Image (cartoon, rainbow, N blue to C red):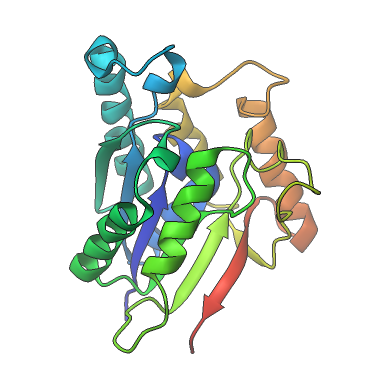
Length: 229
């Protein structure tokens, strides 16, 4: 039986950086994958948030998200347009309810979200909201909850400042790596030149290293937060 999968990401490109290969692998297995991106990903670059001054950039990011989702085989990509790098300015309950609504609508058995210790505040607040929305109450459809790493956020957090990312779940993406790379190319505006951690070379090095940790060509690593079997 095919699984329903929900990937909850803070910004456009996080879903590909964190679990793009795994999205493609789920799609290849016949699973239905939906991507929810909650923040718009651009206005934090302004001194003060003026959304209409970033309309062209936001439109391009939305198009990139849809293109990347299609490359990976996602059934749908939804963008909520919440303020970039300002999720801590929102009431946590309001964010939780947004996630709960999508869980009720899509009934996912598998959910992916950011690691709790990322340096990016949106990643941390979203992790908290998703964990709450996926709490194991009777009737909760989510059976597996995992957190992913995002190059240029997860590894930038000093290990004594927050929980370190210590993966205990690896997904072989050897057959999906090139599609992850292609999906990242859809986000060319968000990629950076080597040796930045969000360069094509760095993302590939990470995938190859995670693969080497488990004896395959390329992998993505996760923390398994909960699983019900």
